[in-house]
Image 1 (cartoon, helix red, strand yellow):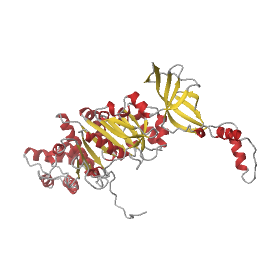
Image 2: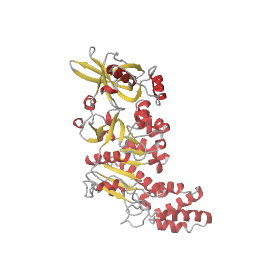
Image 3: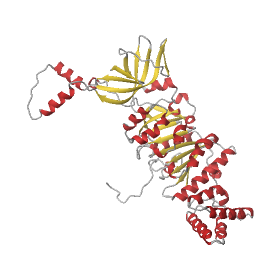
Image 4: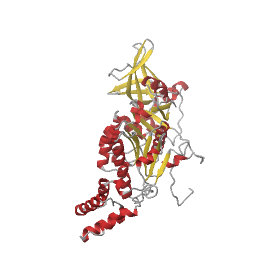
Length: 487
């Protein structure tokens, strides 16, 4: 394997795959000038066949002679040489780090612009060597979380729960393994005593209470499933006026009706009679027919969600549910098949109450949001990324439509786990979150099979690694009703 040329922060290598020099996209290499004790660590982002003069002509000639019998006479060594030349490959690599060797001690540092000459030795690097130099691995962390194995060296990539205390994006096409990785991170956080809230739109996460064989998993009592309208219902007093008004506005209440609703709410609250049934009763007494009809229709719509109750015994408080997880765990809010109104009420109420609890000094918490664009409004994105993040709400967003993620979230992301994507628009939108060159994101993402992703950010000390997500011993898939049960 030889250095061919340098272009910007890229080094192009040429090699003969027939001589067992094969490399893969995402693999790490070391280019070392032993005489100077200096080198660079590069990562393969693309492979190509070498295009030499005469190769196309030879291929066309051979293809055109398929109907003619041609006998060639050449020594075996010559024939091998010809085939080797025709099959030579380019490996396009990105320079990641600079390597120094001082008194037999190897050190990695940020690249200064220096490059080795063409006589430098090129070798494949074991990922454990990079982990050791970067300080990545179980022995470096107090709260280790196993994410998976690097795809080529098959070394365990272990991050720390500490590195997920920010914003993490998990992006990729449907079915590529995003949720599987999110579950691995969630279980790792729970193992270290952290608490989380999961907005689950596919009813997947609560299945982790059981092992693959159907027996109870260690997380049986640490994962609490909350179903809106069943074991997740609120009193009006707990929801609060601001959340309730916002929801009413999203379902079409106009200004005049909203003013009347506020007046009714304030009267009931001041007299200690604030209940959903009383709110409905008072709305029926409004003298203006248009306002009365508008409020009545929308309150009936809210009543059908069964999210509101006047019974304090069946009403849920977020703080009470979190207290059921003294040694860590997760509240899984099942939003599968729920309409937008239900999702709005549930998410707004939980986020507003969570903010209140954090302002009062409650323990920080992790939020896992599947396809958050379906239920988070613009103000929620802004609040979550700025104010709530600093209060101690750490967020993980999982989506197969990255263009729906707000630019503010992209810019503030601390970690990116990118699964297979092909659309240029998606890749260009999400690439700033990686904090590395866009070419790596664009080219590597297109070459990722299922359950494989490129990981970069605080969790990897900002060095991109291609990993296969670890297998979990618990049930991870949601159940979909099927008409045809066999292929």
